[in-house]
Length: 280
Length: 234
Image 1 (cartoon, rainbow over the protein chains, first blue to last red):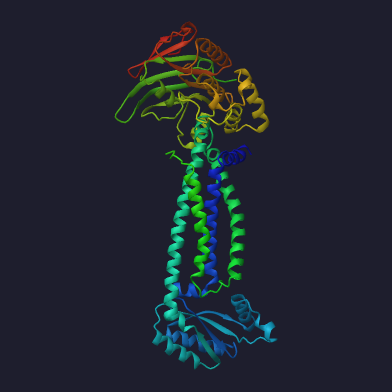
Image 2: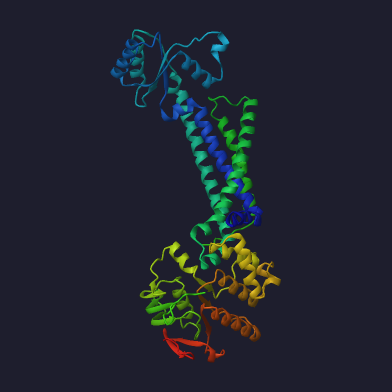
């Protein structure tokens, strides 16, 4: 208990440093959240970056003969690969999850047929794909094949560029965050070092010496997690109100990066107000 | 308090040698300390007194030789092993207190917690130690506000936490007035009388009440017995 209280005392002793720690954590968690949101919420961006463009093959029925025909066509082509099989209900659920529209409720019936999910292999060329899609359409029981050709063309290239730009920005911000976290932790450790040295002489165990700074570190992380959660809610609401939540508008992700950048600027300002010497 | 077998040394250094890289060489030296013994280690500045205390506290590792505590060699130099060893010691460093913002009461509580004592015992023991050393009146002042001499008493309080079997004090009388030096020595005698072995070092010759102390002298990296009033064991 005394070590927990020491951690809190450590935070209380330097409010500027504690604020810096909270800001750094908020920045780190917001960045991680944004990265997760961008990855999960943009299937097109994900497909363009990984060059694993999704395709769907609609079936009249999901009988064994039809599925065997699809598998045989895929095995012959090598440009497309099997990613999964959805029955009609699952296909409707997938659409609802992806686009937020319950088509079954809207139409009063389920318009989705059983669907085989496919993926384009990254090495497949356009001509080869055309041939394989045509072969797949000729399989008995297949009613249609859908592939977003745009992801293989100019749109795909634009998305890839935007994606790399986003990744670069994210990596820079992450480096900045790590640097700030290291600075804040160095200050915190310096605060504790005098006492730690004394206690080490009197037989304190390594965990006892490490506990207070760790309590301070993870205590601020908890506060920052709550703060990031609120920020993420505000941000997503704001983007939805401004109509910027569209997944094809890659630049809208930069809007999400503005807030962390502002936070990091604040953190730098807070840091520059109080210089910290290295304890090492 | 200490159950050392009569006649057997509490701490023994056998043929200990240590050399700083490219610098001062200490030893080979032998040393035996018995429970309840009050020993003054004297020598000129740079003679190796602090180095010897650091070796005994396992803050430095001897190049050659062995340290034995109750006839058991000190072999575990991993952090947990060192911590276990230091819990049996009370160490007073030559440098001042590093924790200027903490009060004596807080530091004593932390030192007792480091030795694994619970909250109630910490309060009781803390009050006892601070009371014995006359620190209660200043117990809640930040250590940064204490004079260097007062800080020495706080360091002694920290060293006495957890009833150590051996006290290793580096220049404890520095920065103390003659009256306070005498008071400090009285306290050390009282501690030694309870069975704790006390080894402290100081500059120059052991002129301090030499008749009632066992005095050792360190010169040229070698240890010699300066006097052995009560049949010293060297």
